[in-house]
Image (cartoon, rainbow, N blue to C red; front, top):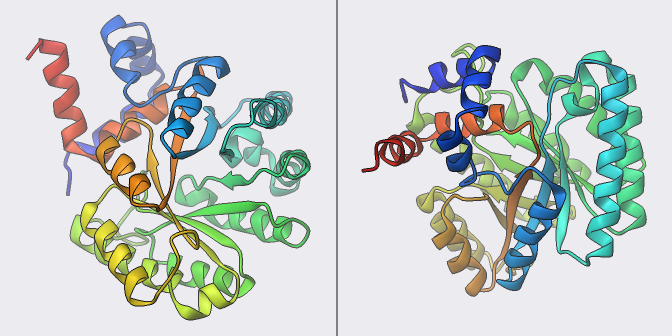
Length: 310
């Protein structure tokens, strides 16, 4: 287990640490490794460059746990504007939304109304909405909302986290519906009572769930797998499984984060796979940045070397 992970995740929730980091020039500069910029125009420029390389994107206007319903409604309007810009710029991009950014803390019904408005606007422009998954306290509520939305809309995909014990059952329900899932490992510090903690266990869980997503039953149901991982062992396993089962390269996609494993992003795209890069932007980048550091010790090492000029 990465011993720095719980420390960095705790710091991601610290207001004092946030103020120190966001006002420290070198850290702001280094955050740009993972953040496309603080403005939508900056993010659009990044997406255009990705598209020119044959890579699709999902744009996320960063934010979470808003303080009021008014803030949630404002975020909803920003996402609707984002959908319009994506269409206007003819970008190959979906939209990613955190439920707490659009008011999940104020109840499922309120959050559903906000997400429904975003999904409806996106549908008018032929765009997909990717509903992100946050800490385990929000898992069931998020899935309740997603299933309710799926009763009326098909242009949405939900993220599931491989480190949670419950995910296999959640995935089975979504495969039965023929929806779409973005499978990631999970970026929050969850207890061993509900989640696997070791890298080996999480990887094994991810592999099992990935094979479920690429199963004959899933594809026959019209299920669309989105495999979000930077682990080359899992990527190669997915490639082997797709080849073994004669799954076309446009029947699933690989997803990665902006600034991480660019070499594999390019390699997969050049090999004809669908590749989608998560492109976050906005002024509320601090919690996201800290979680990226928590995920991999190599990220912390990169930051440390840069700060000391090594």
